Structure formats: structure tokens, C-alpha cells
Amino acid sequence: MNRYLVLVMRNPGFDVGLVGAHRDFLAGLRAEQRIELSGGFGDASGGAYLLRAESLAHARAIAERDPLHRERASTVTVYEWNAS
Image (cartoon, rainbow, N blue to C red; front, side, top):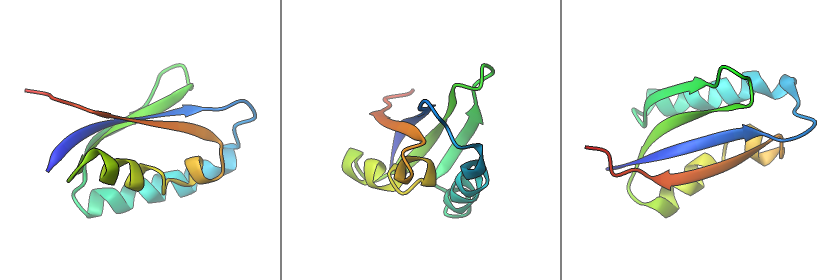
């Protein structure tokens, strides 16, 4: 599997009530051993996680299941990461 950096940046009018569902989503990915690292940014503008997936398209499909994305509370961007 390849690594993908997923940025989850809050949109204006961010609904903090969705944070629990987002954390549950990440916990599910952790249980599937798809996440290596995750965390929020110190300025509360969003966060990021390192996702393992078979392809960029698959990584995007996974990230777009995030409740923050589905409810348009955050913008999700996925980058293929060629880390060494």
C-alpha cells in the first residue's frame, strides 16, 4: 500500500458537533490499520492524517467518507506522499 497525506481544513461555519463523528471515522481507519499518524493543528484550522491505500483514487474515496467532508464542514485534500 502507498501513503497519502490527507489535509482536513475547516470551512467557515464549522460545526464542532461533527468532531465526534470525525474521530469515530478515524478510529475505524486505525482499526483497519490504514492510519499511521493523525492530529489537529495548533491553531484549530484543521488537521491531517497519513493514510495507507492502494491508489490515489482509493485514498480519496476513503477520505471523502469522513463526516466532516460529507457535511461540508471541512475541505478534504489528498496528496500522494513519496516519503522515504
